[in-house]
Length: 434
Image 1 (tube, rainbow, N blue to C red):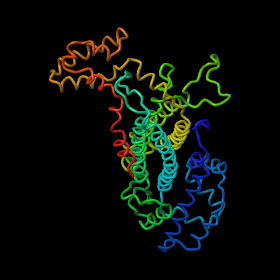
Image 2: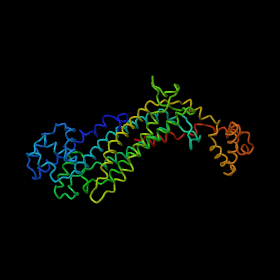
Image 3: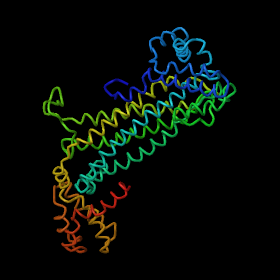
Image 4: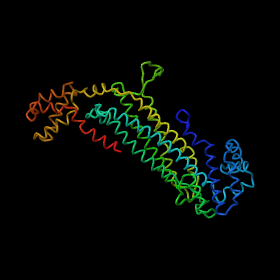
């Protein structure tokens, strides 16, 4: 991923240096297990650890691979240059390349997920703080982009909190799903390596042995993992879209923090654009881009082909790096989001009480008017607000069919804004329960 959308901690997980270090640890732990079984001499296994503090030369490995055309063999050749050919002759005993590659990939995904969970926690903390800050800040709810009924800004943040909390649970499950390793040999039968080696390597790396593998770990695990990242990315976009809407000039209920010296447009000095939330929409597309290839990687020929390999070399780092960056960008955006309660009140009253139409409708039906007639009466008054700029309550009070069923006091009571927020505490208790 390009540096612009990358954070160093996540990038480091996918660096060649980190990858080769994990390859080395897998081989060294496997040698320990083989020595414990009496398959290789203990002194040879111990000698492999002489490279424990070595920073493997990526350029040298690439140089060897240019000849061997095989990355794992190139690494093993370079390892032998450090520990000596005699001590290296038992390295990779009974193993196949995928034992190293797949176990490494899954370990990198586990480590990446731990960083993603930190990002999720920061987003959740920001959403919770803003939700309680604006629990009772009234704003208009919208359906189809059109004024519907009153809600609160706190409920908007609480809704997003609940969604991201579900995403965090899914991410924890995805971590568990992907945290497996396989050291099972050429077709997964352990013909040339004892299952105890796999047990030991996985234990040392914090993984669980794959119950049954072929030459590779089953790719349905990876499909589920990347699908989970895709869902989280869509939740990020869901929040970003709301912020983008709120920052529209004619709405302006909230806007991204605009710092001193910041410029919004190269041509128009007045502009303050929602660039961060727009960027998050784009980053979400990049994360979701990995989902279909991951699903298509599930179907491999027989015990293995390498059609999945090139895909994973790209989507493993790119997707986790992008989502990690997006989570922290979203958290920062939420933490500094500027909110305008006055504009929310202004927008609420833009159509002079029209958003209370359902309360009047229900009151009429409770007073004995048929639902069809009640709808007709309320809509008749409502259309005058839409088309003529009238006041909704005034029109209701002037309508003889409405006042035949409801007294002026009963009509006025239907415009009490507190009616719409009476269950906010109940919803908050559900969302933020321990």
